[in-house]
Image (cartoon, rainbow, N blue to C red):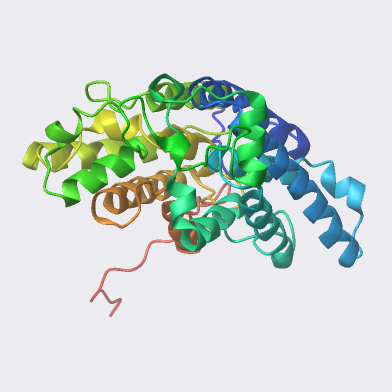
Length: 361
């Protein structure tokens, strides 16, 4: 006779927070390599800047709160917040964008709630939403993929563009968004949303250089790279499969239904899954153990809510990508999800409510 132990509420492995955060950070390496390959080293500079600001901000607020600094910094949670936000910021965004976003994420979204384990919302996404609402043009102006760019930039040009707004040859960041055919390019999701608002069909939009048929140049490989890192996390049992699968499945179902109903105004599921921050968000953002649902059933519901919100905002909202908003909105539902999906204690059964109208007369 074999005893089967369910994953929750029992802990399968005693893993310290520092190791979990470090493993998640390592899993982002394939995605970061893809970002650098297609969009240049600007992402590395943003990541380094964000991590530095995150550590300094955490140390300062801990000193003000009279908490031990070195012990808290060693849990790598601030490092991971800076890393995730740095990945999300456009490679050529001005340096102060990273400073504002990360400082807000650490000080307000994390420490003012009491620190790790007490925050209600994903700190990295709170910082990102602050930047997206406050500086929408800057935060949606990603660099043109290198293969489509009119200008070939060196490391000094990229460093100068981030910290001064101009390359060493005097080109502005806006000029660097011009493609080889002289057209200023936006991200694939933003391009599609804009074209649909102008009355073009998806097929007409997909003829633009930023698309290679029905996939996004560069972004498809970035998503596949983050998918690879996410699957490694699942294999290492750092995260569970429930949230990523629920996010991707719900997004795919919604996109497929929309495409079948009206393919002229709705992109396919393949496009949605491999564009924007889909894989990065599904595996590295939505799975935050502090702000996500706890039970396996709750994780599926939580992931499904995120997938639905991502599709609705992408298709009908005012922002091209939607993961930050979707995750924060889904964070609000976690207390209710946990209440109704809480597993029974070991050796107990869920109470059954008596049928309406029954009596023991």
